[in-house]
Image 1: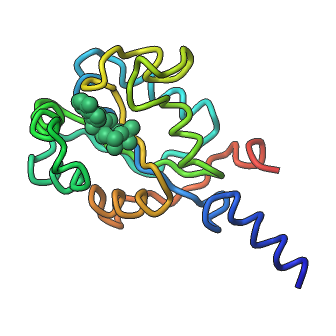
Image 2: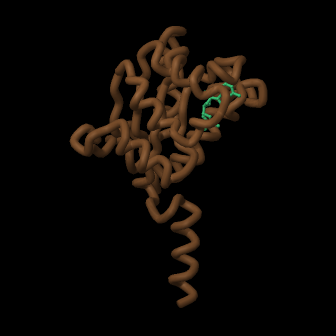
Length: 169
Ligand code: ADP
């Protein structure tokens, strides 16, 4: 029916039918950790109203990072990327909310900090494409793969923020 079609397209706009439960994978990179920016960056996703579902502080193995960046394995910057990402601790996280994948990419800015607007994470905190502070999934589908790669099911915390009804109508 017409109503069903309208409903489906609404669902699509809100992220592949995930609605308020859409999830993304974000990861503070070693430069963010070394430069003492963990709290400043996480604050932006919290303040927006998104819900933190999982977070850890780890030194990632080269093997895990190679899987994470598998699609880039033929790029000439790949070895440098793996070296950078495995050189220090990272903060992998799962965040949830309506449109969280796209909105977090907007909050992060462009891959190249030089092309990122002031006000975005990369625009405010970084200069060089090889030290761009924070990762964010580029689609709902990629987010699912990345979440499964970095977190076990039992590490995803089930909770409802007390502010929920002040964030969503
Ligand atoms: P994004 O992280 O914005 O999704 P990509 O998936 O294209 O971007 O690249 C993954 C990561 O690889 C980037 O965030 C950046 O750390 C690194 N990278 C991309 N392009 C370059 C480059 N030309 N030189 C060095 N590092 C790069």
